[in-house]
Amino acid sequence: MVNPLEIKFDSFQLTDEQFYQLCQDNRDLRFERNSKGDMVIRPPTGGETSDRNSEINFQLRLWNKQYNLGKVFESSGGFKLPNGSDRSPDSAWIPLEKWDNLTLKQRQKFLPLCPDFVIELRSLSDSLKSLQEKMREYIENGTKLGWLINRKDQQVEIYRQGKEVEILNNPTTLSGENILLNFVLELDEVW
Image (cartoon, rainbow, N blue to C red; front, top):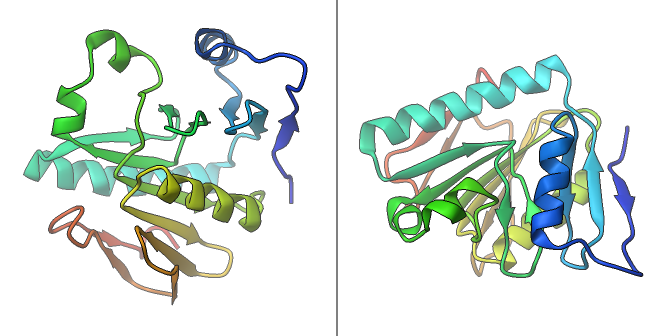
């Protein structure tokens, strides 16, 4: 298992603009920043995980196209969370109201908000602990519903505001509940 590389920034901090530009200049790398300003570099996923991520985003986008309730983002989309972290979930969704409240300039950079819904798909190289910490961070910053899909163990951890994490073993579908009305993720193509 390859853990992400974490680079400490104790003596200075990159501005939001500098961090954004660093990401633009190194598009083949997946950068994130934690709330302390330390940089996290994640290795790219393999073909199998990329295919599964594509399937998840396809299903979410298809649902959103039908209901037109918000905007869908894939893993290269960045979010500036309220705690100062810069994160890129594998899949994310925000309601149209949040999108409409952003300026054109805000839409062109990392979105200055926390998504209402996120999915993280664990690849074989991902540390489960680091993904669980990331999911807790999303919830603490305003995500209403999050799914950590662990293909290795065929489990899904469901994160909700104000509730304990629910663990499902080998589910065939997941419900968007009252956050993504009528959305059902079919997992047969994901496992």
